[in-house]
Amino acid sequence: MPKTITLRLDDEIYKKFSNAASEEHRSISNLIETLALKKLDEDMLVDDFEMKEIFSNTRLLKKLEKGHSHAKMKKGRLVG
Image (cartoon, rainbow, N blue to C red; front, side, top):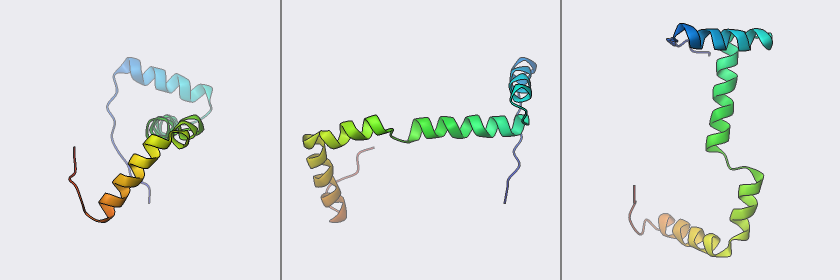
């Protein structure tokens, strides 16, 4: 079920969102949601190039495998 939030914007920022939404024939709400999701995807997901780099690094993969094994055995400590 969709949730409603309140977002306070300065007039200048509101105009930017409003103009951008009008250009794309969408609501301001939809524009903000789309931009926020795109930003989250960019920041939180690994792209194909990064995955290729990770899988080509055998030293890193061995460390990750060892860490995963230790975590499953509840061995070691969590470093934050």
